[in-house]
Length: 175
Image 1 (cartoon, rainbow, N blue to C red):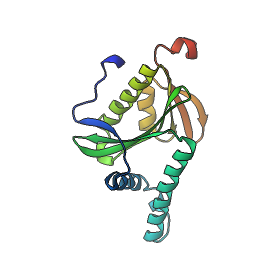
Image 2: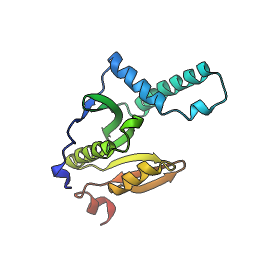
Image 3: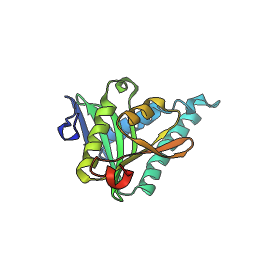
């Protein structure tokens, strides 16, 4: 598939997140679903849930502090909210800060399609796209490698990966 031919699959839509209660509730639920690791802590349920809420607030505050120009998106499939993405279009690059999907939306190619659309944006801007992935997240790591990302730096437990549009490869990647 050529990047210029990219189209999102029918029913898949990426829209800007807004400050509505509905978006906030969805984003909190999505975050909570992904924090099963914290539910393994030996403690009272209320304490664990408040810890997960604090993590959500800290994550958003951290993104805002580190990437003040970041754009927040809600990913919908057939008008149902299925994921989120956070991107920063600054410093001559597209930085995929975060992408997450509900459990039932994973494994259907939605993430790949959305990432390809972001790669298309980077291509149009003539900018590299970068992201970080946990080393233990082999599924995501393999997807990024399949899409042409290369490992730029290893800082356990993360790997920073980068993808260059074809027009930039000779300049930046020495090809």
